Amino acid sequence: MTGAPNRGRQRVRRAYLLSVSVLAVALAASACGGSGGKPAAARTTDRNAAMLAYSRCMRENGVSDFPDPVNGQLQIPLKGEGALAFNSPQMKTAREACKSLLPAGLDAGRTVSSQDQERAIQFSRCMRRNGVPNMPDPGPDGRLQINPEQSGIDFTSEQFQEASRACRKTRPTGFPVP
Image 1 (cartoon, helix red, strand yellow):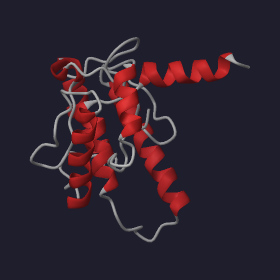
Image 2: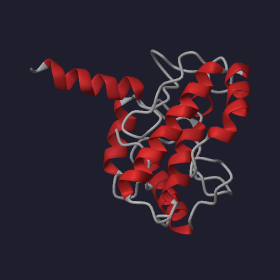
Image 3: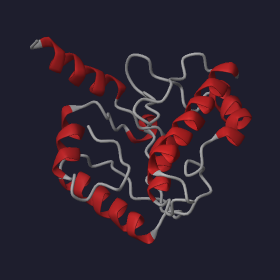
Image 4: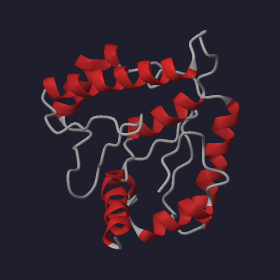
């Protein structure tokens, strides 16, 4: 049984997601309010179905290894085994073809709340203080966007993992937890 926690930890590290849009998506989703009158279970089921439809569309449009959502989240590896070339022409074409299926709250046009923007600023500062010097501040739209290829940030590194744990109290709502 001692191998199971290690496999889980390796899986988390290997798949530790962070794509520019998925992180922005997580922050945008945290700004969603209101229940729209549906019970929480129905909203969750609707959201999972929408995310699955988006994943299928991405695969049908040329990104054959685009993952299905796991526990209601898209986990898109950008580094290491199974990494997707987020800025590739094929990925851009598929994102454009599937944008109408992007679940509500995941669209890049949604405004981030001032509270989540402030949390993102505090989180970035904390990450820099804790050994991730290239951690960017949120953009003018309030989203924390991290491109691992441009920033040199390795989300699977022990340094990033430790900093993320140290900064968990300032972590923006919806930010993937290592």
